[in-house]
Image (cartoon, rainbow, N blue to C red):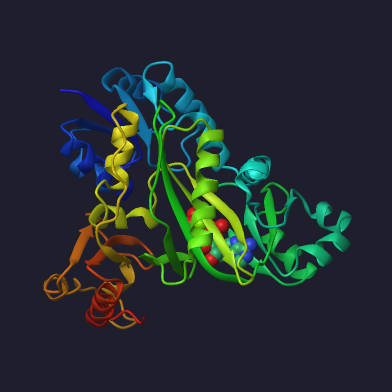
Length: 389
Ligand code: ATP
Ligand code: MG
Ligand code: MG
């Protein structure tokens, strides 16, 4: 057997395992948590920290190529692995995506070719930075969003601030001077989109259709493709920018880039994820090649797959909240049987043992010949699951 490896055992790892196995590979997962979504699916689970050298050596020895699904694997771990096997994506791209300042600097460096800039922003490394630049901050960046430079996701590690006083309070709440933050200007968004792009070791690049994303409480709520708001012009600009960005990184694998479309129609690049992404789950049921299959192809140095979308689709994230009856502590399993009676409903549950509020438990994609039909099924499903649309 030929083995592929993945660092991280969450739902992204699990769906990667399924896709790689369908291509005939055995898959090893390195993940410290014993009872994780990917471990149930994997052929081998190395239970260890992501920076455990013996574990990394074992993974590198076993696998012809290793990828990562966990956003915060240390660059040194990937570099250590890269001395033993193919690592895709490489440490370079992953480490840029882990640091919002490095990421924004990189986007700015790309902008002459990509034609897209990040939001106006400033590094806030200490309270003294606020005092030293208070006039410029007030004039250019407030109201704004303060985000930790590292480790934020699903809207965690960020807070909206309107005034200098709120900014000072927010910086203090993030741990005073030792947590570096970036303050971004609050932009007037019309809608949000993301672009999945995949690049092979030979430089061949494929781009998926634009996904339109709606967030709720900082967490992705739905992804709709084709997006009802997306105009051809923004779509082409975002796809062109994605190709420039993935080339500049000399990237191998699947990369997701989030963009804002502002009310004046202009495009702003927000952030990137060096892996398959929640907003790309629609590709599993609506495209010829899913983002997970594409990742396996890219790392195994196979030809990249067709990104063509064959069905209109809406993807709904399933959070743990719907397990809770009312506001009490009682839990019940949602009515999957009623949901699965809907035509075009494709349910994916991640095998997590315990539902928690805000926890991603699964997703469901509705696929249909027309977007209106997919949206209609979404509305019925939300009624069944008790989710307000
Ligand atoms: P993810 O889970 O996608 O990794 P995250 O926690 O890293 O999210 P961002 O994507 O930077 O955070 O921001 C979360 C959401 O907050 C965005 O999708 C957008 O809705 C809103 N947002 C972020 N930055 C801005 C901004 N500068 N102006 C307006 N809205 C913003
Ligand atoms: Mg993020
Ligand atoms: Mg985001």
